[in-house]
Image (cartoon, rainbow, N blue to C red; front, side):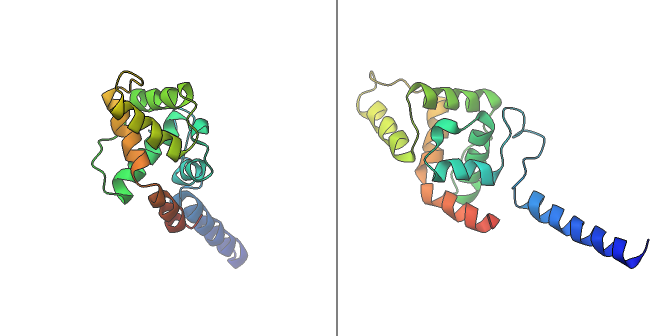
Length: 143
């Protein structure tokens, strides 16, 4: 292999590592079996007030980020829990963190008005707990 080809391979490899390592491209696995997501994609939806556009994999990524960044104690969210969160958001027309926080408060103040299953509540509370952490996550990712 000549020097030009070797240099090209090194450059392409470095670019690939940066793109994949920063979470800009979704990777197969737990967070790419229900719509695919990455930290950059999921936080982008949160920061653009597009909670209605979240898919189940986004929810799993956001829950993972809440655990890592905000120190929230939350076990890994299952596919079923993530799908239930998406269904809850869509059924209630929730598109912003503020609307999500208001719905949580409404459920606490008047339990008969909104029914939030406990496992769904744990996930959405973790996601809504520290919205500023998502902006920090994006900065850390360099996105």
